[in-house]
Length: 331
Image 1: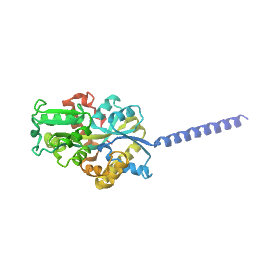
Image 2 (image 1 turned 90 degrees about the horizontal axis):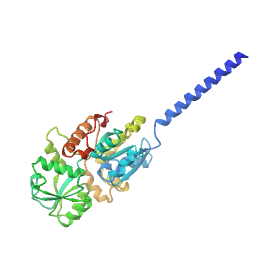
Image 3 (image 1 turned 45 degrees about the vertical axis):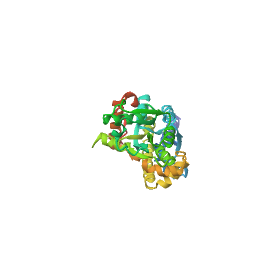
Image 4 (image 1 turned 180 degrees about the vertical axis):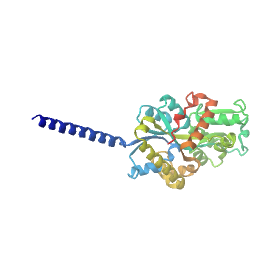
């Protein structure tokens, strides 16, 4: 009888152990991939490299499930990342540094998605360099924003102080574009696609300075790049789903390559995604938006140098302190 009890007890223990083991396997299988990767993007160049991936996700051809949220401003996406309601976000480079501080090192940058998109626009043909801006009035949107800091840095690099010219701020880029349409001899600093919109509204307007080129001239050989947008991930998500993040990076890179090779189709998809309102504007703007995919050490080198410039100009632009090395995700 005792042998029967021992035998039954052994069978019970084996059954329980098997059930626990199966439960662990099921749990692991459930953790291999989330129901959907929640991605937040901005309506502008920062998210244009996503449009082919969005199309693949809609048609069920992507490697995994995605849920996209498009916002008008970074301020709408940052709280969602902080609360864990987004897994990945495409945001301005300096805001990624701010978010890193606010989350106590809770996010990492996984790629650069956009380089410089700022251009000086005017109907005044006498502007042929930064020195030409001395004594002039320049219209731009957002005091204390990235365009403001970039302009101040480039002026200072040429020895032009803020007392040597006048910076007139407007609340939105659309206001600067409208002003230039009415006063083509004025000078305005605009990002794409607003550059294309402004030039379409008045044929006398044209790009007089590519600020990306001016940045490269100021930095010299081996210097940093102007970085507009980066892609960040919550570290908790990265740690739980490393393969999912790896898959996203591969699909993001392929999507960027697709829009570079086929901007016409990219324009259609950008309108469908609600990133740009009009297809003709998107078609003209995309080649000038410097949409890119840079990861690894190249990403770290370009981004760290750019943040260093902003920090030296105004520490609050990057959240009061430069991020640590763990800010940069190097696979």
